Length: 77
Image (cartoon, rainbow, N blue to C red; front, side, top):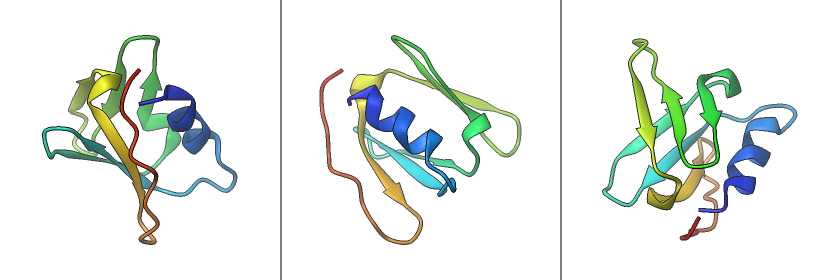
């Protein structure tokens, strides 16, 4: 996925919670922008229980907003 799209979603004002959908079918909810760190080669998502997931950007296929709007599917890095 183009990390610019993820960064844009994290900076959106007002912030809208969304879910990161992965190629393997997993989903990672993002309830606040401070729970996500976006690097050059990794994305880290902190979960409500303080556990975290480290994700390769190539595995992110879409962003889904909680109001039902779905982001475009994107592949690539």
